[in-house]
Amino acid sequence: MVVHAHPDDEVIGTGVTMASYAAAPDTLVTLVTCTLGEMGEVLVPELANLRSDRGDQLGGYRIGELARSCEALGVTDHRFLGGPGRWRDSGMMGTPGNDDPRCLWQADLDEATAALVEIIREVRPQVLITYDENGGYGHPDHIRAHELTVRAFDAAADPSFAPDAGPPWQPVKLYQTVIPRSSIQAGIDYFQSSGAGELFEGVKSAEDVPMAVPDDVVTTAIEASAHFEAKIVAMRAHATQMTTDGFFFALADGLGHRAWGTEHYVLVRGERGPGAGPHGREVDLFAGLDL
Image (tube, rainbow, N blue to C red; front, side, top):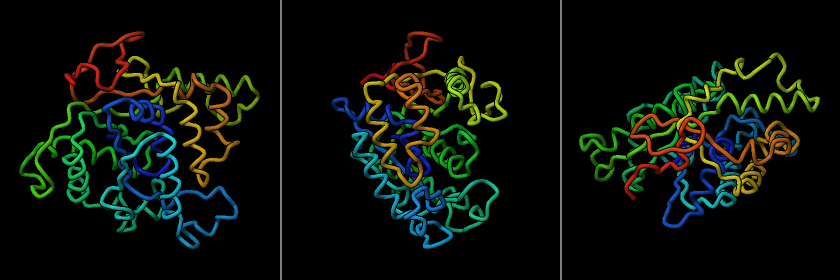
């Protein structure tokens, strides 16, 4: 089960992972998206009236984009936390959207945790995936998704918490998505050598990128380059958020399978399974589990 904040987050950080496990026999991949992404940009000029400061209809439109992304990844079980539109996109940190009583940043933590616990108890996943405590880059909805998932990991096993949400269930492993410094450095090197170094203006190395983590912190690397094309198709599904000549596609075209065919994680709950390669990283999210 993968818990993300907005439509499009699922493919950027976990796209090939989800596609690879969705294609595996006897494996169910469940995606939980916490908001509709109502505060996102609209990069398609003819759809500008969907923006939150105009018609405020972007969330509904992004439901369709997310459905097409899931189809490309082969993910058949997708849920919105609390139902579509229950919690609104909070916008970037420090913006007025953070104060909207409908937004995820203002959500009652017990209520939102109970909504996730209900899904966990129904689906009964062995593995949960979400962001780190900073949400990767500090977006309030990513931070909240992290908090909810960590709380729900334990609460789902507590029969006294949300007793009407189904029988208790304890997931076995909890992972956080991360980007190792070596991957960030590869992107910086590529753009600088290709004459597009302005995309990293003021950044000399991966050491200057807060979201980059030391390579030896990474516990798990899912190499699934066979699903690289599915990830690209899923990215294209989010047309309001990503243009084909933008950063993500430029990186994909330049570094290709090496950049986007492997996704990295840190195991924060559960026992680390046997690994391989540099740093003895797991190559399977289910490593060490008795399946």
